[in-house]
Length: 121
Image (cartoon, rainbow, N blue to C red; front, side, top):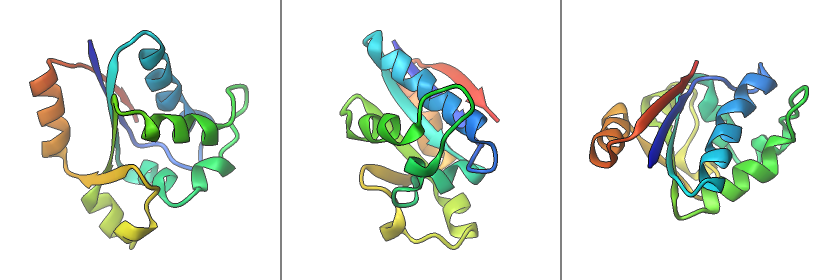
């Protein structure tokens, strides 16, 4: 199965920001592939090592989970290009392994993989 996850939560709500990554990790533990689309403030999590500063109330720290997901060849992490541009983030500021994309790329991942869709936002 392929899971497509969209998230809008960023550093202002650390628990909500962490949940989609926990979902993606659980999917990978079950052998599923994942497309994770970061929208709105979630793109901030892809800037440098900011994910390592996210500590939710209850769930584990985001940093190691984020790093493992972006390094996994069965996971595609896409940062919304218009959201990145609006926040004046440059592509070279993004964490290695995160690519810029659009909702068209997200939709394509859903269609081509007959994905199950999950939204956090």
